Amino acid sequence: MKDTKMHQKKIENILKMSGEERLLYFIRKVSDFEEVWGLFAGGWAMTADNKGRKAIPFWPEKDFSDLCANGVWKNYNSKQIELDIFISKWLLGMEKDGVLAAIFPTPKNKGVIIQPKDLLTSLKEEIEQYE
Image 1 (cartoon, helix red, strand yellow):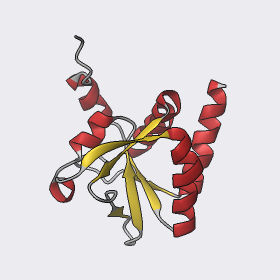
Image 2 (cartoon, helix red, strand yellow):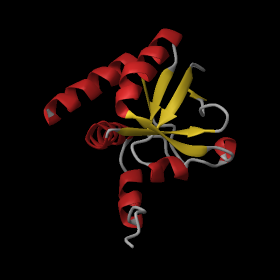
Image 3 (cartoon, one colour):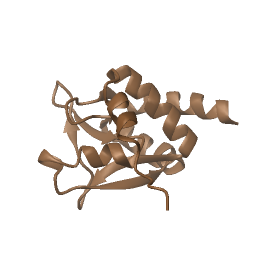
Image 4 (cartoon, rainbow, N blue to C red):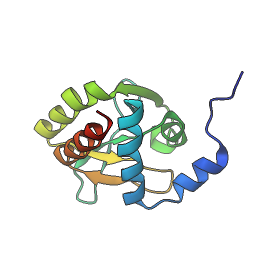
């Protein structure tokens, strides 16, 4: 049986990317595989931007969310969100509630903080390329 864990070198290379590069990787990957990953433990993991505004962290692949399930999130587990639900419910709800998205944090980086409506636009543009 083939090991489904990502090759360690690939993980290291992706973690070396800038926040902007990881954001673009996230958009491409989730559009292609139609899934988003978050951390869950009786509720979704939360973080904040530099101004203290709430943000929910999201990752393109389980291996990356697993890497961040430590520290304040040590009791959290990776949980998959289907892309169509993420687009139709999550991002609209987050926008309404004034909650930001923290895209692709790493153990050493908060990730890119983005407005849900901006993430929605980027995802829809990327998805159109697959149709």
